[in-house]
Length: 390
Image (cartoon, rainbow, N blue to C red; front, side, top):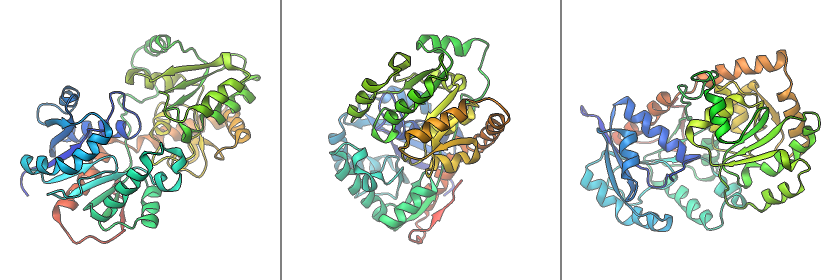
């Protein structure tokens, strides 16, 4: 094929304030558009044309026809999207969030972030679990290629739903123009933090406040270290997700509630400043497909505390201080180590910058492009063989 691949990418599930898989989709679109090796067709919600047109530029086609509500979108994906793909004459379709049209007229690539809908259904809204279990099963059976965001996801997929197509392990990237250890101009970070009513020193949690993130345990651990650091605050930066009862109970029990600051969803421009100026970043999630906030913290030179036995620990190597999942005592001890200055802390910071520097969105886009080409080539797949497409 001499012309660039014409790739349709379903961006209809990305909310106005993207986090997690939504943030991945936004950054991937930007990297693919910048690379210029594909012709992008972005399938967006009917009220979301302007955002994607601005992000992907004039070379991309934005087809804003998907319904706004999730149930209607899932039905539309099966009934209407196949015809749209045919009319747009795309070569391959990419579903970046588990789902794909089962009767697609073109090869499909599907991104699977994690398998917690099977392993930990209690971490998800009850109505989502059967929907996404089925979507993962369909993707494993029907997709020409599957993108797994980590080796852990690829291995678990092989155990639970051995895929018929090829699996490409393609990690996320870091936008090193934004996430870096030095602020863009003197005083820029202070101004952004002041707008959020945040003042150093602080321990930062960044992400949606939902059950898998273990924020109640972080609040309890902060209580254990706060007495030794009288100026220290805990900043919970992120929107309130589902299942917030445990969070509210932890806040009600907190002995240092007056030193806990909730910012709500943080604008993109302020995120690097929050990470850069943190005395420590705590990302104690019990499990993630990738855990990008942890890697972005390392790219900003922040001391990182995260969870042992997770992909975040694998990615960070020795640059993070680790705590066992769910252990308040270990999390408190890890915070104390991260907050301590000295040679050990400096060595972790240097390693963190080195580790983060290996991950770029350009490399991630190249890995996705390899998966697209594989799916279009219609080569006979080798079932279940992961490919380190990095």
